[in-house]
Image 1 (cartoon, helix red, strand yellow):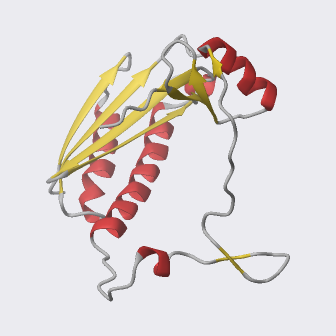
Image 2: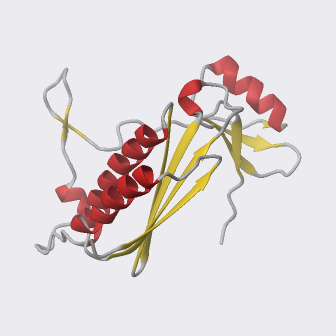
Length: 187
């Protein structure tokens, strides 16, 4: 175990057993990516969570030179949430390694290397961008956008012209059922 592990808790008593388990598991993350210098694990218990499956939250953040990876999971038990978060972190590390360590080196573009999708009906290759959609944006308030999003059955996101600001906004549904708003700005 070469990376440092910091364990923090909120509304949970940090027993020696939990600390030892977390240190052992999170300490082995450098096995997947040796560039990890430090791992922070936060275990929290939320008494007022709506669902029993959301009462315990585990967050894992790993730091290395030039990168930071973070994952969060919820479960009924604290260690179960930690195990799910650890699995997600391992997948993130593999993706990070794939992006930064497995270069193609053969001069091919990403489009040439991208996974090819075969159309079931024709048997021919389909482009990665399978559909292009154009639509007219009508100015509306944020509340109207939420209603419109629900009426259209868009579960994940809704693009609209904000009547108050005159700018394009993206409304999205968060994991906990509330809504978030993205207000893009051109840099």
